[in-house]
Image (cartoon, rainbow, N blue to C red; front, side, top):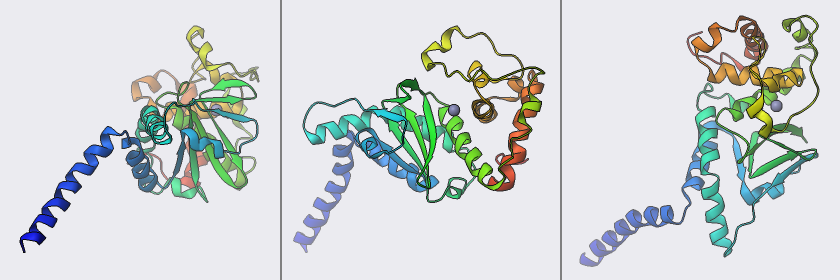
Length: 255
Ligand SMILES: [Zn+2]
């Protein structure tokens, strides 16, 4: 009996000690990642795992870590804790079951830097071999970036069902406006002028796709006071919801 009690005590002690040991070794992001994957039905790959990402035209840069294989793993996971936190913050506000509409799954690839055609970007979306892939840069993305890329995935989903869904989009822009077609580097953002009512930011003027993604990000992040001074952009946001909600359901509770 005493032996059984000792064994039980040892077991309880180990149960208490193991999480503490694990925490000091830096695997909290691993627990966090697993939680997010199960809670929202998405797949997350980060750091060294991005070497398996096979998206043409997109280059994922991974900072090499020093040390033993285990030390590299622990350091990499610690490095991506901030980006995981942003991702969790953003995807938590979508309605239940939202991400399971992307079949087989919506995959997030978290890299240190992301290059598209040699240019640094905050993130990007790609649909490859039937997979919905979102890539996010740890160094160039911020809180809100996941919303922008999620819209690109939503738009792809909508267009598969309604190919001309955004055919009338340009009518929501000011007369004579034409998209620039030039993708600026994210670092250029500091010197941009304030955008007019029609656009959520200067980047929106690149193309219709980027305009819609930035408007959607604003929809998910900005408050009523911000929107009250932007009636033209609001019309664009309402158009997005009109196209998205028949396939994704209501995005905002109480609407
Ligand atoms: Zn974009």
